[in-house]
Amino acid sequence: MLAAFSARSARLPDGRAVLVRAARPADAPAVQTFVRWLSPLARRRRFLGAVSELSPAQLDRLTRVQDPRDLSLVALAGGAEGGPIVAMAQYVRDDPASAEFALVVADAWQGQGLGMRLLERLLAHAGAAGVRKMSGFVLADNVPMRALAARSGFDSAPDRDPELVRVERRLAPQPPANRFAERVRRLVASLCALPAITLGARG
Image 1 (cartoon, rainbow, N blue to C red):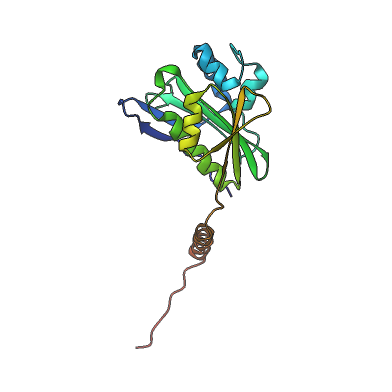
Image 2: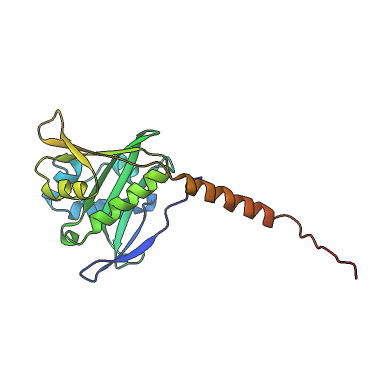
């Protein structure tokens, strides 16, 4: 079974702390505030068009993951609960073996490697969920995102829409050693659950 995403704190190069955790339905108001605070350019790059705020359906899709194999992340300023959202990243599977991702970092938090951290965690979770191909659509003039994708091992190709570039990366299957280790762990757990046996000795 796929493990749930565990919340993790991180400190950025400039000293600011963030808490990265899975999004929750209760985050919908904070997500709406986050989107409203983004610059028009950041909103255009994330949603591939002019967007000022999200519809109820969009908020629901970003905060209520329907399948545990998908993932939606938020990064909270301050490294603890209660801080404002400063970045988001999501992937949703197109089919059992492929998924599409998107991410956005608040303007004042860019350039600190936060986008890379979120993308790495998406890729790790997706690989464990059986996703073998991760892809996304990036505006052709979104140079920072295209550079991030390239650093993360994505290939890029023109889309039929001349304003878009498609980025794609193949994910390696989970190593057999990991599956073997999981089987061993389950076997040990089952043995530990058995009643204790005491061996006697004649003497």
